[in-house]
Image 1 (tube, helix red, strand yellow):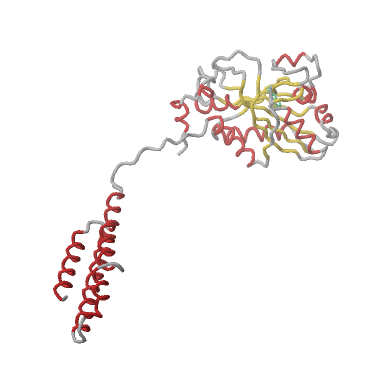
Image 2 (cartoon, rainbow, N blue to C red; image 1 turned 90 degrees about the vertical axis):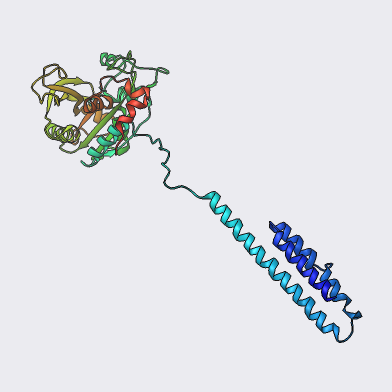
Length: 344
Ligand code: PHE
């Protein structure tokens, strides 16, 4: 019996040693320590032993069982540890390898200009208003003192859907819409950026679709000097502190008086060069004092309120600021162009 137990023990320990994975180990455990295993069998057969032998063999069988169990357990934790080690090794990252470059986009130059203009005017107390790109004839023209068949409508060739619906030709309809919302009570102080559409043939300086930013300030005692001051402040913040502006008389049906606003040429400092066609000045926007009829049509008492308005082309501002020579660059989405406007 003694020899049999010793042989069993040696055999089991040898198998534990040979077990290469948890599955093999589990088989050893079941085979030697299980209910149907040889040691259980020995213990079961104890009744046949003599009274002296029984405790000795019993003790021995228990010892053999304990030794096998201990070896199986320790081999099992060794195998588990080895598995974790192997997994860690296979998942390790070489942090010294160079990374793959991430292609980040950049703000479109038109968006950047709109945001910069917005920031400049928000700093002067304006807020941002928006209106629809598909506009009614009323807001695009009539509410701006351009009745049907008015010859000045020809200044802005339009895309019509129906007699009454068109793609807006300028952002000025947002003036009328905003004033209506204020129901005759000032102050109104908004800028309105957005897309506009005109039936133009596309070339280096024309596009059938472009962007404008409208400005409107209506309050008691708003004067032309306020217009000039606001635009001068804006021009210096947008183009540079050394730049000057000048106003030239012009005509718009919705403002009276109306002006074109020029900014001194940044290339030659106003002395005259190819960029400013030797005038020293570059035209940047249209403006004027809101026509009393426009105020009245949008519900403001023109004997109490006055105001100024201006409208500028975003592409034109961007072309002047970044020295871009073709308006079509803004729409063709060539990344070699766009990537130049990355802000760091
Ligand atoms: N809406 C005019 C245009 O598109 C610009 C403008 C706006 C002029 C406001 C005067 C006042 O040409």
